[in-house]
Length: 354
Image (cartoon, rainbow, N blue to C red; front, top):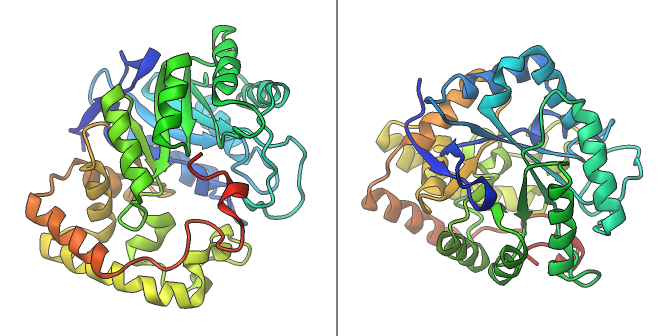
């Protein structure tokens, strides 16, 4: 297949055309049993091979997207481009960082990662990312995973990132999990190439909608992570036991037994709409996210070539106004039970949408 839909990045990357659907790499390594290299590589290549001319695909990684070792995702990315250097120019690599560098034994959880966005740690994080990439692929974009404005102003954060960019450690500055007013403040200091937030049929809050609107106004693309609800909206996950022991998703509020049973009504509704259209629930969800705007880039995760191609086909779908209304009617009829991460952990500690 050849991807049909493309869009432009923002800020200093506004000259770069990317496919309308990207690829999230987190769950290749942030689970007890990482995906074997060759399987992961085939999944990544399937997307990059589908690109039209003069187009890149946004690949999304993170400095902490591993259990043991913590940098497993970066090491996977490095091995991929070492083996397939001909794909370097087809990929736009985005990497997150921003937590204390100490190694933690055992499974990582966001409430156990300690945020540290000090200039010293930010510089260290960027250096570690480049060290783990080993020169096999340049970091195209860097973003702090969560800002900590109670410690440093958002303007101070941006000045540090601008300095690191100007020194040549990466090419473009991005944002993650920020509110609309924060996007404005940051973009006034350094042009923002992309803003990453969670967007899906079960994660579409007022703050999310405001972010999408302000990004459209400022010509900044929204990188929509977890468009499939971390797998739940595919209909393939029905109970916590469907995740292997130690999988981080078992700890999230929406994946507890009672919440999953409640939330599956939403999946059933989406599956019924998808069946009528002859597509999968995953494709419907990706198409719905993509329809939030021409600047919205869903980045579904995929560890199989077949699934990558299915996801990309979903991103190319055009939903009619009637289709979109049906999805919204299902969303409104079945409100989601449980927060995006941990209900027992204060939102302030998780630094969501600051």
